[in-house]
Image 1 (cartoon, rainbow, N blue to C red):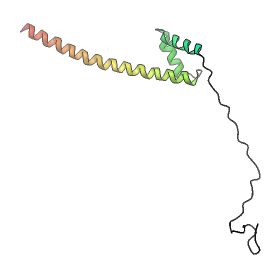
Image 2: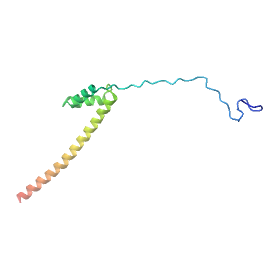
Image 3: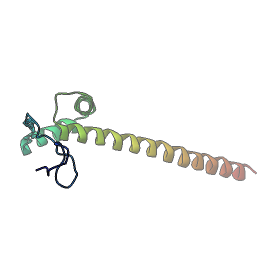
Image 4: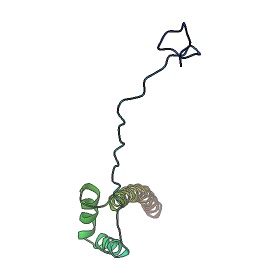
Length: 114
């Protein structure tokens, strides 16, 4: 409502009046995909991953492929990361203990020969 003497596009309080939007945009519903993983599918996944030759290949396919569920892909990536951590730890410990054993054997052979 405008009062007499006010500009036609201003309200009684001096604030401009804005026209209501002419169109209402309906929000688009995005379908949510829920993985339907069963206990049986996880048992098969764990069984295949535990096989000696097939297992690492299967885990790589799950981690790098696009056909598996998000949960199995994340599990496969975590399995690979833990495997790499274990491998690096094993190599470091092997080098440390190998060096210690070599030092111990070489020192003891020197003391026996003296």
